[in-house]
Amino acid sequence: MRKISVKHILILLIVVFNSRLSAQSQASLLTEASIDSISWQQYLTGDWDGLISTGKLAAENGINFKWL
Image (cartoon, rainbow, N blue to C red; front, side, top):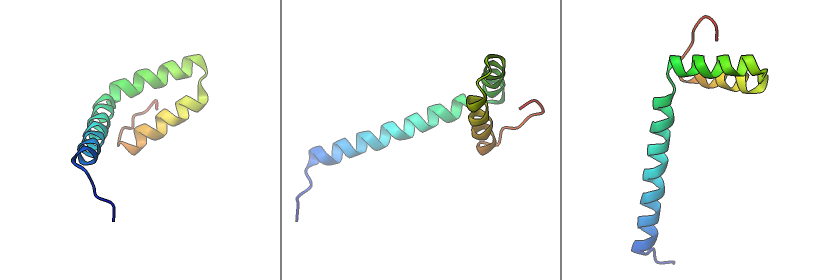
């Protein structure tokens, strides 16, 4: 059986900690105002695939409003 070193444990903890911070940062950026701004810009530029993705992301996070 392979022995797990302290170095491997530290690397794993750093990766887990960074991924949790990244997820929290993304969640804090998902506000109704930010989704509105992003989706409006995508609409104006004709980025239909991006607009659909933004709408789905907003819906998954409980953000919904009349013009979305």
